[in-house]
Image (cartoon, rainbow, N blue to C red):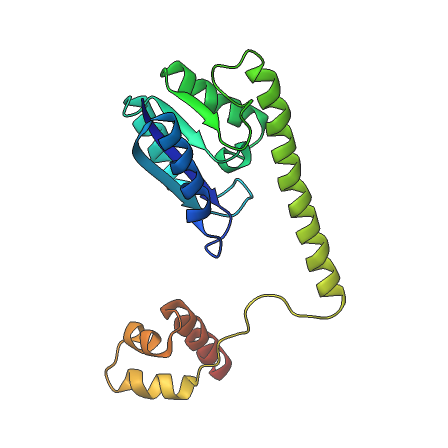
Length: 197
């Protein structure tokens, strides 16, 4: 059987190989041929684009493999019950099976698959919401303590920028050398000109 591996890690600091090594070993024990591996590095919010996931779904629609093996349902999707079920149903409609390595009861062949998936997808979405609420509470506590959030404003000597620009350098080139965006220089120049007038 031809299979595809699907992985998702929440940040670039996490190691994709941990998931993939075990998925590869499991596939080898089943005598499955791995024809593709799809790994996205995204936050757990479910709101970021998942390029590899989308590619996997496209390839599944073209029957490039017979089954998708993923680490755990929350690695497959944290988009909530409806969307998760829609993705899995779409795979079913294309006659592409799916299986969770950590949750063997999540198998496209299981009798109670829809019930179990609904519960697990709800739990995954609930976990995402809990993480979001904890993050918001932490940020609110930090703000209340008087800590300024976000990046510190870039320190740019605008007199030097004006001198270099008058000497023929482009704002884009100056911005690149100062490691700031051209938009920042334009904004600061406008503000300086507004104050001068």
